[in-house]
Each structure stands twice: as structure tokens, then as C-alpha cells.
Length: 144
Image (tube, rainbow, N blue to C red; front, side):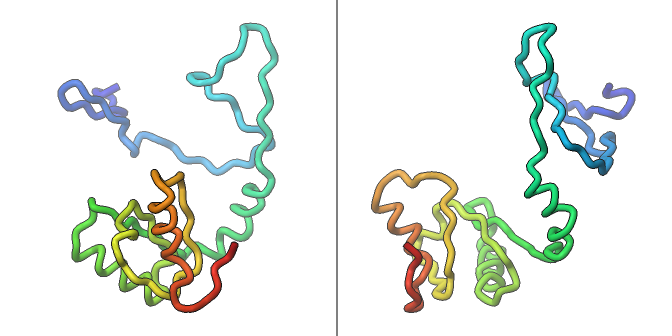
């Protein structure tokens, strides 16, 4: 596969070459099972997984309207210069979303922020209050 250009190998690591993939748009009513990860008894009918109609419709219609929406990460892996630029763009409404680790807990004031999505549960009630407290800081009422 390496000789054919499908894989890139460096020492004992192997990576699929993205250029070897063919992306083809199609409309499905069922999601095919992944033969590598699905578990089924031999001879059983395939379990049918229906396509989520909300997302199917969203990607066929509404997604085209938001194609200019941009989000960036805000983590310790990003340089200070890039983080500052992203914070400024976010404050000005040029970035629709910042994807953060605890960096936003550390006193960054974005006073008109109205929504904070917590992807997982913070380790303590104090962390939860600190993270969710990023929203509603300019006098607007917090959603309960």
C-alpha cells in the first residue's frame, strides 16, 4: 500500500494519504454498518441505522447559509499571538465560536458572551461555576 501511494510510513508508524481517498456525495436513508467495528452474529440480518432526518435536511439546505461561519481553538497549544488575535476577533463577532479548554476560565473577560457550552462535566462545583460564569457578565440575565 505504501508503494502504491495509499499509505505513508515513517519507522513503525503508518498514515493514510488523504489524497488516496475519494469523497463522494450521496443520499442515504440508512447508515451502512462499519464492518470493522460492528458486532453481529453470522447469518443475522443487518441492524438498520436510519439517517437522522434533522441533520440530513440541515446539511442539504441550511448548511449552505452558514458556510462562512468560522470557529477556532483557544488552548495552550496555540501561540499567545494567535490566542490574542482570536479573542479580539471573537469579541468583534468575526469568529462565531471558540473551542476552549480551561484557558477561558483564567479571567478572560468577554462581557457580552451569552452562551457557554460545557462539553463535559468540570471536575468540581467551583470549576463549573467559573466556566459557566463566562456568560452573562455584562448585566444580562443568565438563562436558568
